[in-house]
Image (cartoon, rainbow, N blue to C red; front, side, top):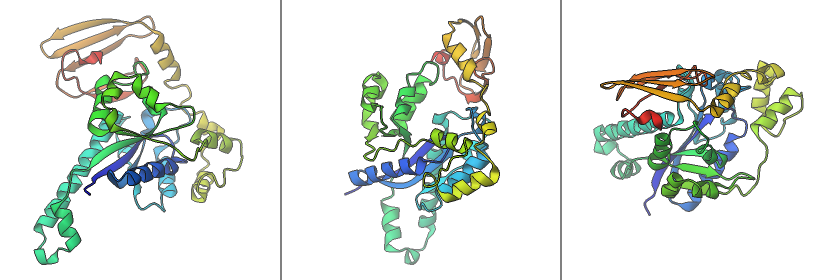
Length: 319
């Protein structure tokens, strides 16, 4: 029976301490269903500019991820997201990994095409003849679905692209009801065939947050994370009270205030050139761009982030 090949991507990774457990559940779920052949898992640590409280340097997070996954023969750590100048939106990271998988597939086809027939093994020949386009799925916890309805957090067209073009593998967690999240959203309901719900048969309530708190208090976390990671943390003196306070004043208060505001918008248009002014009693925010051209959106007046954006039409800023 023919099966599709898929790559699982774990994005917006803040810490690595418990991710291999989550990833392995999705792997067995897909293999059991026989619908997909999982060819690899990609762990993509988030950029330092994400600004979450207690976020340690990407350099340390990548190192710990590699240590935690050193015995895995199918999950790898990809530093691309951390190497960008600023935080990158989820959908753009997915596009990058998908394009990379297509590029690698094309390189493999070219290599096999140029190989002399006598040099090809039977396995190589079959692989060349039956190679299929790989799919890419975003691996996430069930609570990730709930964030889609958080005001001003996601762009509607990004959600649509994620669930339509890529798809989700969603791991259930205690207290979450992913099926209900899907039911409450017209968009998620429309593409629910591309959202795979995986039940976590062995409930694991251990979280990276709890482990960090234990480390800050000098408590033992042995058997909760790999010994190699514990040694790395001790050697570099991370997850201390000082590191937990990092970024605590960044974004959180600003976002809470911004969500309570009811700003006025002033729209100025000159051909394809747009100026959007968002005016409020808290802060004023001005966005200037040309339709159809990628530009850097400076959110200093909103939540102090910078990101690359593309407005495909004159009024796409409303989504």
